[in-house]
Each structure stands twice: as structure tokens, then as C-alpha cells.
Image (tube, rainbow, N blue to C red; front, side, top):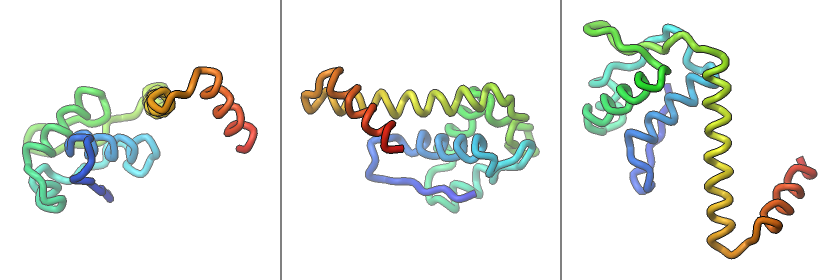
Length: 124
């Protein structure tokens, strides 16, 4: 599992870790029932606190992406295709929301934003 953390980002480290693990699960890079690195191993590899890794794993478990077996480790949960699709959709919606927020911050109107989206759709 390849994780890159950005210490200068405004996004907390545990969220960066969570998002990358989640993306690896959704993309299929991490398969069902595959073991994730232990909290200690990952914290040592990334040079971050074990509590930060634990928090990310706990949040992933709350969202249904992983399961933790006490004394055994944390594993990728059996994926529900609908759940995975909804997670992908949520990510795209969040990206769009951020882009709209940025556009409004520079003074673009809804019509300007829609025009930009239409141009992008036509180009792709």
C-alpha cells in the first residue's frame, strides 16, 4: 500500500490517510479480506503517531470500509458494490462543491460556472 502524506496540507493527517486507504479499496487496489498494515508498522513507515493511524482505521471501520479483529488486525471489509459506488459519487460531489466554492470566491455567477462545466464536458 502506497501512502503519501502532505504535512503542509490543511487536511488533517488522519483524513489524508483515510482518504487514500478508502480510494485504494474503492479502486480495487486493496482486495476484500486483505490485511492492512498494523497500526504500529504503518505509523513507523509513515513516521506519524500510532494514534493518528488508529483514528484513521477507526473512522474507516465506522464507514464500513474495514473491519478490525481484536488481536488479529484490520482487514478490508467485503465491499458492497452499491456502497463503493456511493462513496465514489460522494467524492465527486465533494470535489464539485469545492470547485463551485472556489468559483464563487472569485466572483463567478451560477451561469458562469455552468458555462465552464459545459465547456469541460464538450472537451472531454
